Length: 119
Image 1 (cartoon, rainbow, N blue to C red):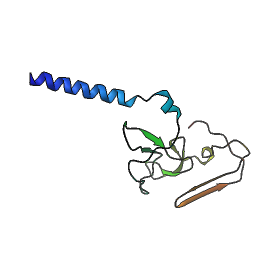
Image 2 (cartoon, one colour):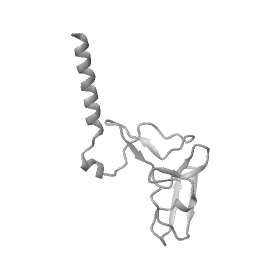
Image 3 (spheres, rainbow, N blue to C red):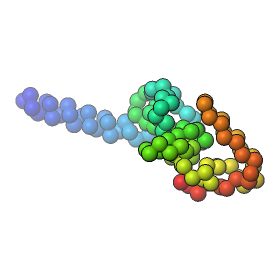
Image 4 (cartoon, rainbow, N blue to C red):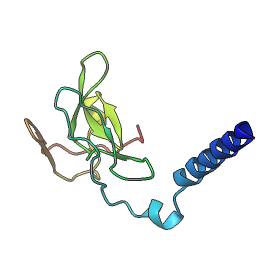
């Protein structure tokens, strides 16, 4: 009897976890930044972070944030990915001026931008 009760409890936890990961379409469309679950660590720069609260979800860092690839190569976050190719750092439309400023780093350009290729 105890094993059946334990099996039912495990099944309920799995069902709850599966439904917790599905967000309604209205929430998916809302692109507001969520609050970080943990403070940002400068020595481990990634382009995604874990949001506070339930269900567990991740959000992208702002485009232009300095990031590091695995081999220590510096790049910039573009659409949630760390891009090291400087020609793909720009996300503005052609002919616009962009300035990205992040704590401890600064990158500026006045040259014509190349549209993002969805990297």
